[in-house]
Image (tube, rainbow over all chains, first blue to last red; front, side, top):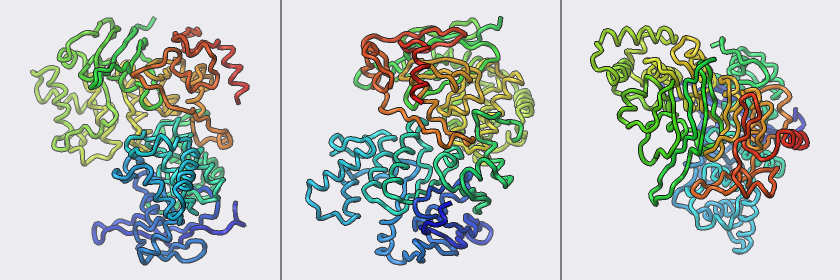
Length: 270
Length: 336
């Protein structure tokens, strides 16, 4: 699947070790991956399997102990602050908790203007900026006119998460990493958020990486699924293959633990 | 005929805000649970699920106030009782409640056995230590929890184990009804399954007679409860058996909710998710007519004028919509 497409982000032998001596913990253990352009990837695992550590390494927030990350075929270089900022133009993230994702002192205008500035639109005329912001807000069904002069905490959780997507719409990164984007909101808003993310992928052609423990979500959205256990990828492949015909016992157990509606949910296996 | 363990008639409770505005978070709710039955309550955030759970216990503290209605537990009317009497004679022995963040409610400086002591002594201060210890050990054994947990501190337990311990502590006095408010939403799938297995086991082992299970995760409700009640903006909009509620919903809101289910099963990948547009109404000023009218795809002009009562569709099934069953089913067929 997608073999003809170019590699967008790949990793070789990526490892992260926390602590040393007796407290040494192998959080991510020599993982290899290759995410392609326009691909929707899910990394699924239980709590403590190292998903978030991997995400932080991909974002360049923590340095890997070992291994390399390649961005668009070239070795990623984030040795200086300037290079890091250059890299962050290409990769952006949405986090689990929208309430703690915003700077509480910045108004919503500032949040969105920052995105325009990051794209090099800092010198555009006021009217053009406003137009861009309105467009971004209407993409996620928010009204920019109602949001000006408001602070992020005046919005509801679902609105904040949508504003986050409006930011991504302005930034147009090559890769979007979504770390549990829907686990704090209820099922109805979840569908809306997923809709916007998929629409954004179709429009901008970015690579979408979902980090989640929700197997249903992974199955629904992604092309490729990676199953993570104790810092290792135990199984990967197309969503249909991995979720419907799992090979590894761990994957099978994980899937059997999710409540189903068409099949019998077997409670005797715990 | 099985007797009703819990019967609620026309229960209305309100929150009073700082500016003396009334918010009716539970609005004329009636329900009935028979012995051995479980009821699931579904709905989006802020629809009044948790407030209903609090109201059912009859234990009100500001800003939540009781307005009217009756709560009858096993033939005993508890509405209007003083909070102190409720705490001594109802909570724990008649109704037990597991709040959302139950596992964070454990005091980190006390051992699990101390919590059990507290619960039992609050109801009967004369019980001796040995009796408490034996009861705790016996209960933990039946519930499949290791006895050494009793002498551990909460920090020594994993999340799933903490949650199961809280459940065990709350049912130790064998209450008639257990209200579980999102008991598994902070856990990963495997611990969730263990918690669910334990909750289902509680009814089989006779610890509780019936259960109310609150969550917004519909696949979970479908697997756990007999009946599902869907709430919207403080009102019941539909009540049906779990199977009917998931596969054949009548109210447009329930239909929307069921459309947002995501499960890892074949064939569901290409089904488009049905998102419900808009936001729930502000309950400070609820709309005159149907509360869902603003967001409803099948809205008619008369929907917004008069309030809609609950219609009885037979077989214990009720829904709150002015359209008839037939019209609704036809509309859904064309919609898909």
